[in-house]
Structure formats: C-alpha cells, structure tokens
Length: 509
Image (cartoon, rainbow, N blue to C red; front, side):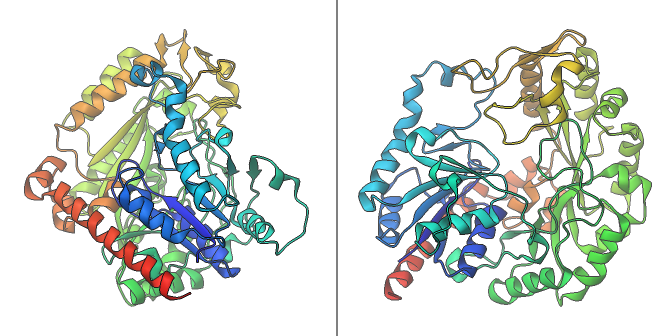
C-alpha cells in the first residue's frame, strides 16, 4: 500500500495552496523507492468519517510512518502550538484537554498498524513527544530518508538519534540540485499556486529574525536554472499550473540573481509565470533596475519587510534606509510601473525605539491615505529564548534581549508557559499592550481598502481574476464573489479526488 503518509495544511485556509516541505520530503523519499501520499488535513473536520475511511484504506503493514507538517497548523487534532498572548479561554482549561484529540488519533492509528511510527516536522513546534511522536527539526531532506530506510531495514547504520524523540537535520548540501516533483496522487488543480524553491537562506541577518540559514553569501544556495525550468514545464504539462509562491527568504537580494533567473528561467519557458515572493523594498530603491526585471519576471505580489516606519527602530533591527524614502518609492511604483502588482509589508510593534506615541502615529498612518501599501500585517514583537515553545532557532533579540532593555514576564522555567511575555522599562511598552494594539489595528484595517495582497494573493487568485484582485478591496471581493461557497466546492472536489486516489492505490496492488 503506502509506506509514508504526510498530513499538511494551513489551519486558516481550507484546502489552500500546497506547501513546500511535505512535497520536498515526498520527492526525496520517492526518489529512493518509497511510496508516499501527501494529504491536506484541512479537507476534513477533525477525525470525521471521511478521514477515518480514507486513512484506514491507506494504512497497512507496509506503512512505516505517518507524519504531520505543522508549519502552518495552529493545532493538530486540537493540540495547539503557540497560544495567542492572553488567550484566557485556553489557559483556563485542563492541560490534558488538549491531548484528547491527538490521543484519539494515536489510538486509531496504532489499531491500524501498531508498529507504525508517528512523526512531526515543520517550523512550528508542537509538543507531542509525550504522545509518542518523534520530532524532526530544521531541514531534514536527508535525515528523513535515512530514518525511513532504517525503519524499512534497508540500512543497519547506527544513528543514535533514531532512538530518541528528536532528530535534528543538517544543511542539505544537495539543495541546489534538488527538485519538488509532483505526482497525480498529489491532487494538483490547474488554478493552484505551487511552491517553488528558488533558494534557501538569506544574505541578511535582521535582529528579530529566527529563520535558519541566515547570513549566507550572495549566490549561495540558488537552485540550478535548468532544474527550475524542468519543474515549471513539468507542472505546466501535467497540471496546467502557472502560478507560484517563490520560497526564498529574500528573492531580490542582488541584481545579478534577478537577471540570472529572468534570462535562464522565466524567459526560457513557453508560458508566462505569475508569482508572489519576499522582497526588500530598500534594495529596489537602491537598485531601481530591479523594478522592470521583477515585473517582466512575473511578479504579482511583493511581500516586503519594512517592519517599522520609525527610523530609529528600523535601524536598530538592521534596516538602515529611512522608511519614509521606501514609502515614497512604493507610492510612485503604484502610480505607474507596479499599478498591477500588489505591494504589502509586515510591521512589528514593540521594537527597541517604539513608544506608545510612535505606535499611535503608526496606527494613524497605516489606516490613512498616506499609506501606499495594498495590504499589511502587524505583529507584536516576539521574544523566544532557547528552550521556548516557538522555534528551533533563535534571533538576536531572542538570545540577547536584555541588551535591548527587555525583561521576560514569563519564561521556560514556568511549566505551564505557552508563550513568552516581555516588558521594556526604557520604552514603557510590554507584550500584552503590543499584542492588543496589533489586533485592534488589524481589526480596523479590515474596514479599509485593504486588498488580498501579501501571500493572500497565492490563495485568492484561484477564485478571483487578476484584474479584480489588484483593483478591488477585500470587502468588494467578498461582495462580488461567494468565496465561502467557492472554498467549500473546492474542498468537496478535493475529497472526491482523494477517494479516487485511494481507489487507484488499491487497484495497483
């Protein structure tokens, strides 16, 4: 039947875009002869009848493991990862309450195959080791293959990590020559946005950022152009897909990189690609030739990391160019060359030079007419020191928060802690205030001309034509399109096709 089953999905999106991790792992395992199926768990209502029937049909004595990619899952069968700051409705509950849903799944899975292992991976940490899960941390392209071979008794090589509840990956040195290859069983729709790994790592090292592989040199870890072209052409010929989310921590880190990818990839395939990706606006200001290159390459949604409009706070995190210069540049772009390209930015409240006054000024600006961005998202500053529940890696702020005036309110020594609170006597700010302010501004943003920018483009482009995504606000789109109905129809179609996949697997025995 199936050797490996991978559940993935985004808790906020029913049957949304594919994510890179599960299919990167599946590609590597399939290359080594293992049968793998990846299933979007958001198609089910927990362990409903569809889930039980499909899962039962896939598991056999040949199934080595079932894994969960938790990066975009806020919970796994009710077991939460990082709880929202001040989420009293969770904190008042019996902690064992959260284990009941997962325990039901574990019991069900073990009845189907008592020897099958349960794995957990992804960037978001869920605490499931007490329920029998083995956690894979960081990039594990190679480690997951070695572990699976070991389970299949194809390898007798001793690796002591395989006897623990945590397996830590190393940098995948073959990344630049790797691919993500999809099969018919992966259920790809023509309108889907697929992830495309252009590179791994980032040449920058912002102080708030805990992404792994930061501080790379220019040109490091870029995928070979020939292999990228092959992926694009295969996905077009097999599924008709032309929309992508480029998984690159900073796509425009150099002009040379943009020219290389345009000359050797985007302009060399016989169809037009559209994509969203992370960009740095300050680099576009510095190298304005990027404007045309990005547009001609197929950029439809630029996710910028301005982070702050407070010059002192921006500088303190490694963003040297005055935010106002970048804002004015974005305004000019939206008037002309990028009028059909969505520009968005993330912002952080609580940075070292933020105060209540500067946050009030930000609120007035972001909700006013002087804000040129199509979409924005706002986060309170998170501080997660080693041992915390948030991430496998730590940022400069996580490691040296005291140097910036921060003091933890709760920490890893608290056995019940599920988040880290902080306060800063220098700025008179604290995490609860920044969290509540972030939520307040986001709630107000939903009543403005906010559009489906950022990564939302990757989700909504399959339901809404390009011209409306760039022209209409979110509220106008909801009035024009019955998005809830469209999502429900896709969910039903996905489940229907999933049953067909199960049937094909049975018939292929």
